[in-house]
Length: 295
Image (tube, rainbow, N blue to C red; front, side, top):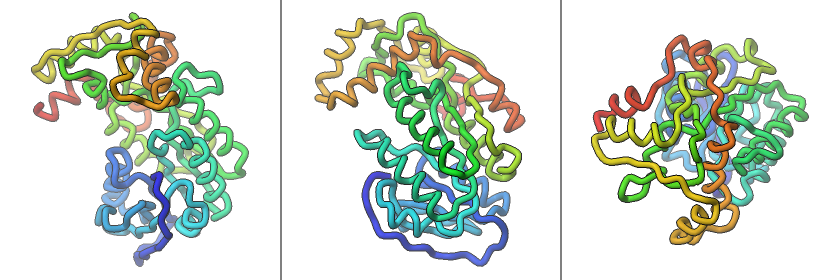
């Protein structure tokens, strides 16, 4: 949600509290929106392009983007509870988030459910987790009710860490990560949005049921996906050098490398039972996630 666009709302005739859902064209938000529709929850899908919004019973559609304050206020007016997904990685993501929080408060939103990050802190090793902390602070001071969902790294993207030869490389050492599947995060969000008052003021840490090293993850990915994976531990200098072929901006290089140093530091190794407690089912594992895809 980084491009600007005007806001327009196409209304449904459903009754009941209105839930605003951002990110409904993505993996997490799309699953959330579908679950709410199935449960008969009235919702408004806030998207960049209305033509890409999923067609769901009981769903209104509004066009707005993070960073477009006027459009965001218009799109959020009348929303009682808002599901706010984090924006795409960008150098101004923090500013986009803070503007959207301000727009939600101005529009009269009563409660925001936000996807933050495990270990969010002003001095987090993972550089992008600092943006999440700033967003959390803005939400806390906004006057709105807040529920924070601090997700670990997504289990789904572990294969994407690998290069063309299936090598995951970075300065993670023997550190462990309690990665969580996007589907499990979406199931938690859907549960919270169907009974938001029960979760007002809560902070949940959404993790898998185990924490694995990248060496272990590589071996298990190889078994689940039927192709080679391995892990190479790099030094900091090696990590920055090996990523120069993509010519990243400094902030992006820092984010990529600190993904691994955050694993090494232990700040994403904590395992919780929050997914099970909130959904009633165990979190997906490497085998159940990638085996289920039939890859």
